[in-house]
Length: 301
Picture (spheres, rainbow, N blue to C red):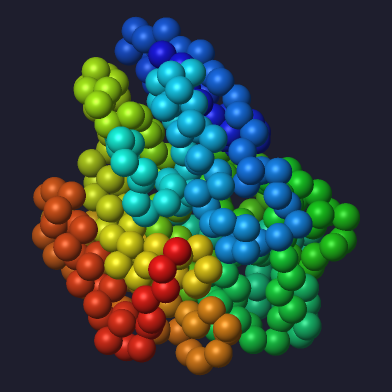
């Protein structure tokens, strides 16, 4: 079985993690490293150069051409609607879904002086940071995880905001000065979860990958992605969605910000007993409808 993966250190860790899980089940695995357009274009935000699909298109081409059998993705990088002929075979158990506050000099967001420079290129993080600290200067930050940390260490930023999951997976948890609880900064749909994509007709692979699936994570992220899909699935709008189980009930929160930065955040919540993907997706659509009822606009990707 050949795994297609991006060549960043984090992506290779993720592919190696899946490789280990499959080898423990008796499969022989090799990795096919691919540099994607999303890795190459670092001077512009994703929303201006084609969205998150830039991280997966070349991997999908490898599947279509038979050079690879499966592709391992960070789920938050996967477009809400896959191309015809492709499917998500499974979603693995989630790492920490929260955002991390990383700084060399300051212990928490509240400790930053007025006008401090915070780095992120995520429209979602920008909107949520502005709601928490409108006095901060938020500047673009692109590149892989090591590049972002290097820019912080060089003094280009007073602090940066990163996904806690990536830092922990690479053994960099000590760089985290604090985490934002979802009540303060809702994560992106799928944040912290890994997904495996295959050609839809490869039933043999779908069956082989089934033991790796984590049902609670899959249902939670399905609800989150349904919010994004119902809002247009656009990379060019600030949108957060995060779900977790409370007993048998899946509790889902979402937040939407106007892309031009004007106006307050629109927030919505919902909960339902969810035992299958259809119920989780229906919950996501209900919460998206509440967002739209509160003034959020549909923005196609």
